[in-house]
Image 1 (tube, rainbow, N blue to C red):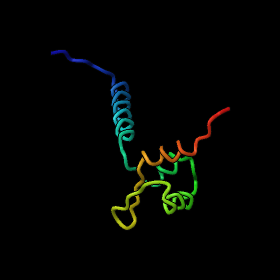
Image 2: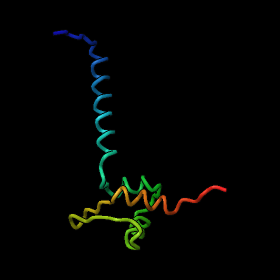
Image 3: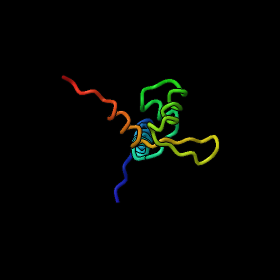
Image 4: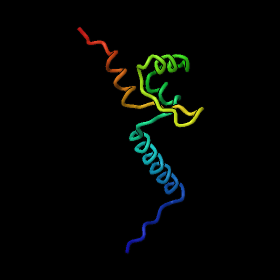
Length: 88
């Protein structure tokens, strides 16, 4: 068995990097995201614009509880692709 010694500062830096890496990987694999993440994904700043897209049926959503609305990440990507313009 080997023992590895680290200085305290290096240890906490390593722990922070591991935590950040795990959180980044976890977030990328989630299919359903909340409104704030959906707005960031679509690069919009208005909740009313997000609601309009939802009401018009342009993006998929799920409402597991009255005040909780989750958005399908694949649907958001499909919406962006559908509205993408080809270059000349």
